[in-house]
Amino acid sequence: MKSASRAKPPVELPRLRAPVVFAALALLFAGLVVRSVWLMGIDNEFLKEQGSARHSRDVEVPAHRGRIVDRFGDALALSTPVKSLWAFPDKLEASPDDLARVARILETTPQRINAQLAAHEDFAFVARAVPPETSERVMALRIKGLHDQNEYRRYYPGGEVTAHIVGFTGDRDVGQEGIELAQQQWLAGVPGSRRVIINRRNEAVEDVAAIRAPQAGRDLALAIDTRLQYLAFRELKAAVEQNKAKAGGLVIVDVQSGEILALANWPTYNPNRRDKVARDRMRNRALTDVFEPGSTLKPFTIAAALEAGKVRPDTLIATGGGTLTIGGRTIHDAHAEGTLTVEQVIQKSSNVGAAKIALGLPPESMWELFSSVGFGSAPKTGFPGEVAGRLRPAKTWKPIEQATMAYGHGISVNLVQLARAYTIFATDGEVKPVTLLHTDGSVEGRAVLAPATAIAVRRMLEMATLPGGTAPKAQVVGYRVAGKTGTAHKLEGRGYAPNKYVSSFVGFAPVSRPRLIVAVMIDEPGAGKYYGGAVAAPVFSNVMGSALRTLGVPTDAPVNNVILPPEGAEIREET
Image 1 (tube, rainbow, N blue to C red):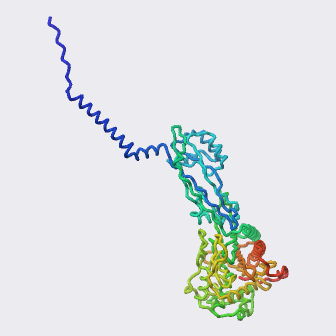
Image 2 (cartoon, helix red, strand yellow):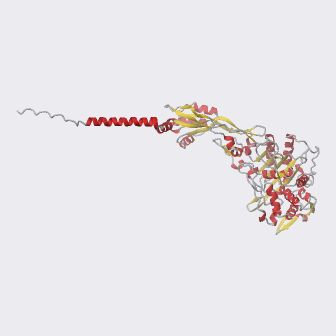
Image 3 (cartoon, helix red, strand yellow):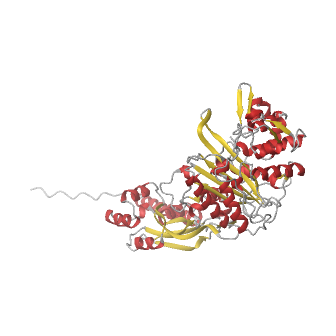
């Protein structure tokens, strides 16, 4: 029997294998150490960014928006504390039942909340500007990842009365309309920020050292006198409703300072509740809408002729029985007259008389005066959307166009432009800049007319409000007033609508020392009356009388100065 075979000798490993493996491991470890030192001590921005992206966010801290106040410091717009609910969508731990409860408290739907979260990957508001008590009810649900923060909501004490002046802000407290938009930079301030750290339980921890404090916005004082604003709004609303009109506007201007003391529009809206409000109601028609001024433009035609030396106040004008034909087109007066003085052309508002006077002037003379008082250019109040109106170059005027422009057809203006233009008659020939912002004292105007011309036209405008004129209903107890009626067909397509009118009146008082200008426009009166003397002049009377008494302006006429035509008597009107 053969002996058992001998066992195989053990396999010998290469002697260098162990040292090589050890060296490789040591080299790898050394590389990791170096890389760690490099990332943690030298080039550590990457790790900081990644850590911050996962565990911290910068959250904006809103600045307190400045107040808008009237000339006496009473608030027209102010910011009140509210809460906003927010979340990092990837950190929010809310079940469908949780979202349903939140939605019920916020009076919304879970679908809307989900849509809001889905629309923002990094940071999302669940609700903005909710009452503090509502926020408390939501936070009481203790939903992880849902947070609240202090914010401000704009509140407008004047509501619909001052809406068209002040405007409103949007969700992020940024001006959207009116003064809120025009003065956004002044009012807004500078937002701050805070660093929010998210711990492992998805709870927000504020790093106080990282806060940048917000800078509050500045207050802004407007020229508006709230007392006169409420007065203007009340009377305008009543006039629009009484005359079944489409809309209306009213402006009160301080003659010496050019400040707009009141600016009212109807229809209006409540800026505190803008849900389902039609944009049409938000228009500040006194600045953004234009209309043909009609006979309220006649005083400027007469002033141009007086300045050129073509006529005097007592110059006789043959009105041809109330008709004038030019190039196949005929101009009519509302009432046939014979020969009138230039003063009577204004007093009785003769279209034929005004047209004849205009045709005796070079077109450039009329255009220069119209342009110098601001027609054809924006009034420069700084209000968003204010329009310039339309004043065509004089070289394009045909004789019939020059004739009709003499009584306010073929030109368009806004109500503030028209009120501003009348400052040349309320002063001794100076046109004053107008402003919505509060100023101190009077402002310098720009001379447009000779003082004698301005005084002469002022006398004519006073005659228009007395018996025999077109506006006896503009008279005010205890005060002498001056002004002019306007009635114009509305443009519709390429022509004039036969039964749609704009009725207007512009005037000032007291005549002995003018303090206020009031301009009234009623759009499409539909209750049977449409002449400016019947529709707009009574509004002027009510507003002017109350405004002068409110401001304590001394009277310049006896208390029995108002003389109205007998009941049923014919009142001279213009067309």
